[in-house]
Length: 305
Length: 239
Image (cartoon, rainbow over all chains, first blue to last red; front, side, top):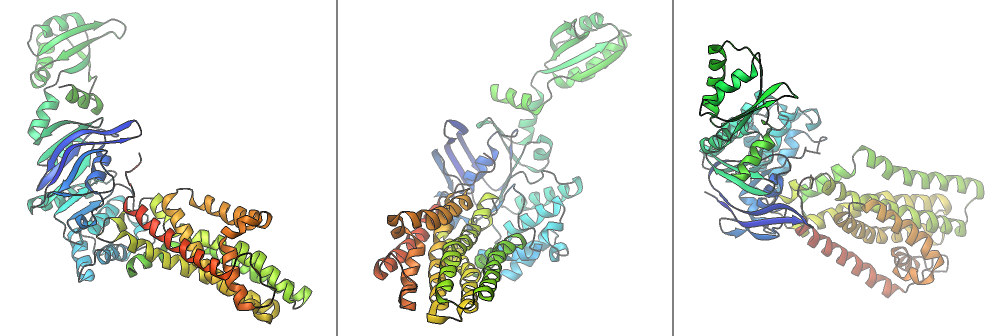
């Protein structure tokens, strides 16, 4: 059982703040670090992995300071986002080298075991340069598993991985979490995170925007006001009918666009209301499109909340 | 202090295709020139000394030293793959020391060995000239490897700075400004070579004692400092 604690951690580069006063605790099980690109996820993982000193605050592993403490690597396994540059080594050579660098008593056995876990035994005889993106991710994961770490940190592990291999990787992470390991991975995709993570930490623009299980995060994200652009055969009649229902809070007739801008406060109710109202009034819906579904707008709502 | 796995990975990276070609080209050039000179001018001690001093020791050894010294760690830091070494319970000075040994070995093989061969071609080791310059190349290999390994650890532009030092400071500036020669790896190694060769064909502006002290001091300090820099190396993605 291992726990990473961040206490009021900030990190800045010159006058650019990458991480701003974050306090969080990452314990056993799978934790997802969710946030848009550039939110500070990589910086946070670098702080937890001992590759960056906090400008303020403390980062500890079971009470021990992480920065400049090489002993933590007996407990921590790291899967960096960056592509492996050892394309000229075979998977086997690469994972074995990692086992040897850990000074394990039987590096050969550790290497085999790690390759078995990620199901890369057979391709391990081939050079890494010939691997697909998913295979390279798995070989990186194997290299982080050789010493059977109780903490596993993964930076964007699913990025660019095809769907089948993604499912495989997700199942592995869930298994590690169920084994009692502390697993933290970063992602900018909510669906990805909620499939795997028990606990979700949301970071936006270097700040800790939300924290909780996936139900709580999902609720925060779906309960926010949604905006839609609607075109129909009779916009004003539709507007009058929609505003009568409490699931909408505002409707604007956008003359330039020739459309309605609808603000819905109850997402679930509005999505069933709209087609029903249209049918009852004999109005044809021509366009219904969410106008602020970008991840950034979802996240910025969370920050404001 | 020495980690065989770090050494193996460093050799693999250093002697990869492209770098091995550059490392091999200069020694071949030196040997080819020696063959031509011997064929045209015959065996002459002064010519041998000029060629080994001017081309081998002043130009080839530092360039090989730059490629091997910075190449032993620089590219790894640049592309982030050093993370696989650093995320291990390995002492940082052990990583540096091991890479230094590898860089020294590569520099010696690609500079001292061709110097010896060229010397024998030029005048058959007359007046111990081939051996003297080979000793100088061996000695300077150590100091260059340490200096350029440090440079590769602290700077992303290590190769450029290294070449500027090797070519501008050691070769050009050193021959124009007498004071600069006291702070020149080449002159220190010549002091050692002078001791080996005897006579006046191989000379240095620096005394043997001063040279030895400076060689040891530069090597030890550069290696120690590189170890310290690696302990606090910051790796944070693309910021």
